[in-house]
Image (cartoon, rainbow, N blue to C red; front, top):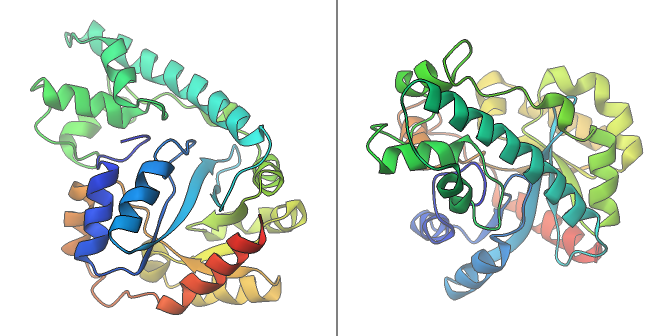
Amino acid sequence: MYSDGTSTVAELVQRAVSMSLSAMALTDHDTVAGVDECAKLAAEAEITFIPGVEFESSEGPHILGYFKRLRGSQMAEASADYRRFRASSVAEIVAKLSQIGFRFDLESVIARAGEGTPTVAHVVAEMHSLGHLSSLDRTNREFADLFGPGAPAQIPDITERRWPVARLIRMLRDSGAVPVIAHPFRADLPLWPEMVKAGLQGVEAYHRTGYLEGTIDEFTALAKAHDLLVTGGWDYHGEAQAFRISQSDLDEFEPSDDLAKPLIDLVGAAV
């Protein structure tokens, strides 16, 4: 739980083992705090590990950065900046909850993130541990009634505090990472020329929403047209989400294992 997931690093690796995965990546939001621990556990499980990170841009797209080794200080600068405004957002949420009768320490919530980025996931975890919430699930009615639009502790809009997408991509390239747009949507298409010019290197064409909306072929073709890597991923936030997906119509969604090697090769070449 270094960012907005509900699983520990050990639980993530165990899930990879249970699924017989040969490779995995960790792309926490805004932080690489869990990378060393995940690398160690993945090695013990004989799983190829790709270190990574994910940042949300002010325009909307999420950008992944995969790396072997980081260089310079720009990644640390970005992580610190995002941590500051996310911590401020969490403080605002906790203050709103206090006004409607929930009492718990902000410091305890921040501590749950450790060296990572505090998010509403840590608020939910603290409330769950104190018996204020029955579940860690952030898509159920209980969560929406507290944190959703118009709710008493509505999550603040932090869009304007995020970095622009081109700045994020350049930062990742300068840091020795391979920038890949995560779970792209058609709404992102107007930004495509700007992202490619900034140094985008890959497209996560294979993801669950793309499968359900039928955009995999479209984004695969777009990637090839711009000579970008095609990758796949699962925007995984914890066991509650995994259970919901297991009950959905994703049974036949199985991205090819062939997607991993080109990414691993490019990450190695970016050092």
